[in-house]
Amino acid sequence: NLKHLIDRLHQSHNLSLDEFTELLARRDEELQAYAASLAAETAEKHYGKKVFIRGLIEFTNICKNDCYYCGIRASNRSAQRYRLSEEQILACAQNGYALGFRTFVLQGGEDPYYTDDKICQLVRQLKHNHPDCAVTLSIGEKTRESYAMYRKAGADRYLLRHETATPAHYRHLHPPSMSAENRYECLRTLKELGYQTGAGFMVGSPGQRPEDLARDLLFLGKLQPEMVGIGPFIPAAGTPFAQEPAGTLDETLFLLSLIRLMMPEVLLPATTALGTIDPRGREKGLLAGANVVMPNLSPKSVREKYQLYDNKICTGEEAAECIVCLTKRIESVGRELAVSRGDNIRYLNTK
Ligand code: SAM
Ligand code: FES
Image (cartoon, rainbow, N blue to C red; front, side):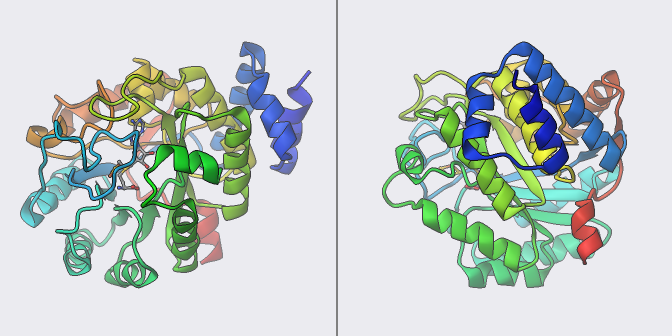
């Protein structure tokens, strides 16, 4: 009977490495449903029925890194590369604002064309055009100086998944040019600089064991990020992991619930990857403790090219169509779409 562990996590927000490992290795349907019901209740206690939306602008798929899992890795010759201009990015945000978005996420590969000056200029423009909006960056590993410059320019939040808290597993997923320690250090720096910070990982990535996931949870508990992004690993054509199996819906849902119980006030998206492995994946994510969705605001013409993994959903829709579709999905599980920045409440209380 593992329910007592879920109860303890619910009450004390903490478990040991062995306890998390046991939960993950011995999960069954009943345990998962129990964790999901407590997690959904916890999300509602802190954020009500609200689901926050983030307008994702995938502004470049050019990347100097070569992560083994990622469809836009540098050595994937079959990826069709693109960059959005500043005007295009600002137009995406304008369109998004009219649709009710109050957070814009600039995400891209680690593209050297976008120098620190260009990023700062973009952030300043976005904040100037939409002073009531939050700007989130998700552009990978940078120096402390660069992160400090973006923050000064007005960036509010930063998403940088730690990918895995097990250094040996990190080496299995990345080329030797990348280091786990640098990734973790970047996250600590982002927190220190006052960003609302998002960490996270893929579920079911090649070589991942239950104890690695347990370590991911402990890592989150220690870092205390304001956001956590998790989604299933999905194989991508043109990568070394193209033939590996995808992560599962159930394991991802269970982890969403554990994260919600461990960090009651965290902002937790039901990700596009979750919607890709199951047609109702995002709705199920909301029922398991998630409270954020991140639809795409990028122009239709480039959407198919930001192909991190195969069969990614929503590549054929306009932003306006996505929001209609998402509103229905959110309402189908008894929740409501919020038109607000959707800051982390604990972060707001400590400022
Ligand atoms: N370059 C930035 C970075 O490294 O943080 C942002 C873009 S990166 C593509 C965003 C996230 O996509 C990664 O952190 C990774 O977890 C996820 N991702 C990449 N390839 C994936 C795959 N095949 N399946 C699921 N998620 C994937
Ligand atoms: Fe660059 Fe993944 S390899 S975004």
